[in-house]
Length: 323
Image 1 (tube, helix red, strand yellow):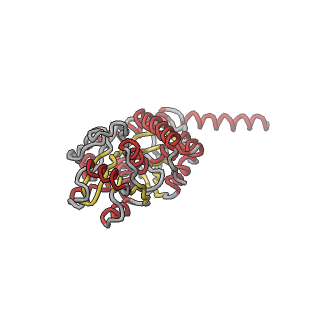
Image 2: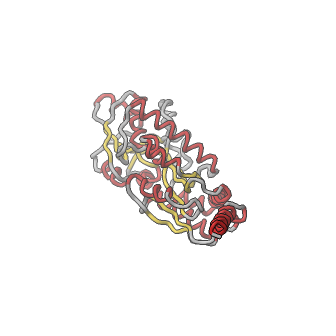
Image 3: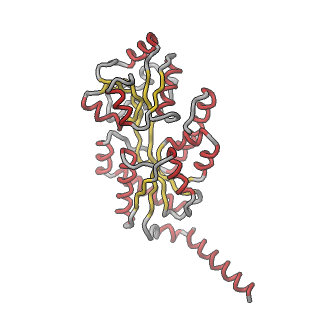
């Protein structure tokens, strides 16, 4: 009798598992509120997460509840999603720094492998800015950096994409600009405006209000082609630094590893449709951000290629990494 009950219980659980993996389960998803974990409290990344969560809630007719979990460079938020059941009811919205952290040590690499990419939602290039009138051109910046050896640059912290872009510029241009780390974009900009640092390497989204107001000058942008938002800013490639790769910041949605492919497909499809909506496009444009390729395969490719690139760069150049 006990054996029969034991087998019956196993059959019940097996049936539940099959049901959860069935197309019908994906079609009825979601049947309850979805938690959206993010590592920010405010700013452009948090606004991106909230915008797409609100739109997903409208489409799915279920709440997508955004929960800030800041700290440890995004690791606290990521770990919470990794530990969640792969049922689509706990999602992660995080940034491109996740690939740098994965490249810097094996523990973080394991964490990234425990996440399922779903879709990118926004992207922005980095821009090199100075106080208005300080250099006027990128050429003048490099000339002073070569002659004085005292130029410094601000980034959002050690081991960030902005920091590494500054080091790549140093290598490519043959200069030695000193890195000064700050922990927020607003502090970077305040340091530039106050004359504490010469330039900041920062996201275009963060610097755009200052550039647009004329209080800061944009010397170069890190994208492969000129930004549609700010077409007057030349690219680093145009300015002769052709061996500096086009890098920037992006925001994307992930789920736990082994998430039902049908749920991944459903989320990606809806995110793509949201990105095509004129109202969404107008909002993103107003932030001075851009909409990327929202296909899951595109995000998987970006995550893989960026992680390999950063790992190689950190090792070859012996670059400092974040704690």
